[in-house]
Length: 413
Image 1: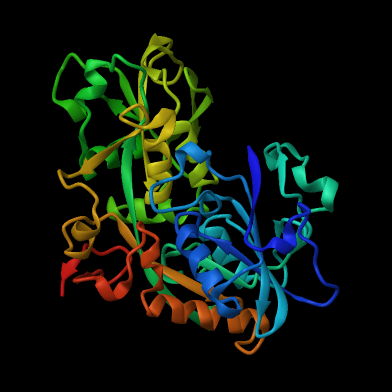
Image 2: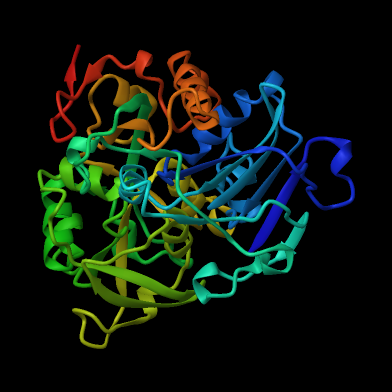
């Protein structure tokens, strides 16, 4: 993986982001699915809508970046540098998932997240931070800090941490999701090619029971491979919205798999109620080919071949689609109950798999604090439809339908 710093000003030409001794720090976490739009809004809140630099780590590969986004918008960690109100300000993001974000801002006196240090090299080959050896250790220890602002794909009423109530929260927009099937090598297997649609019923059975036969999606009795759900952990707003759309409670115990290995050499492992902590990581594994000829050590009992479907935010979905050069060689999006995800289908209430994005200020922060001022600015940017520069999030003002609650079906206005 690469950590890329986008140099937006000549002052950073030495390859290190140097920082002044007196400055504000603001810490943001939460939804991985909405991070592209959040990236845009944060920059818009800097003085003049300009930052002096951005450090981004754990980005999707350059060849996988969805159309309309830049590589840094897909990162798991972000640092922004510039001035707000004339004061040097570093905004730090560590995208932990919606549920984790709510936990952080509700329990802001006791919970923390790891963020990147202030000073980051321009470009460094890294390892995954889960290895226990953060790649930035050469430049300073990880910044372990309480969270000021959290993004979430669902309301607090439908999250795990319902109390105490968050005092300051605004709606940031509409976040759509989609189902996709995992990539395969050419020539494409005939049974895999027949998987074009998943119904809510089929997805509900698969996610609760640990998989279904491919024939249940294709209608062809010869399609006997098992099809599994590769999904997110229970800190994910993507998972919350998927469960609610399927008519299941957010506390539903699921039976999912994790794809491991590499492109052309994949394995499947039952992780039961577990799942990937990052949508970007899940998207990467969905772009790996070879499951049609690999051993199925789950339900297949050692038989050859298996497939997986996954629920993803749109940015992550197109990362998976664009894997292996795209052009049909990556993951493939599926219709849901015969309807393809599109902005128009979401806006008109034809497509149900979407949620309302919330931006919440930690109760530890006042609205007059630096974090509170940024939160107010972010809410204003989204109200003004400022997220339209990101093609995968929809301004609330564009919607011609609504959900009366996070668990409700959309109805036209």
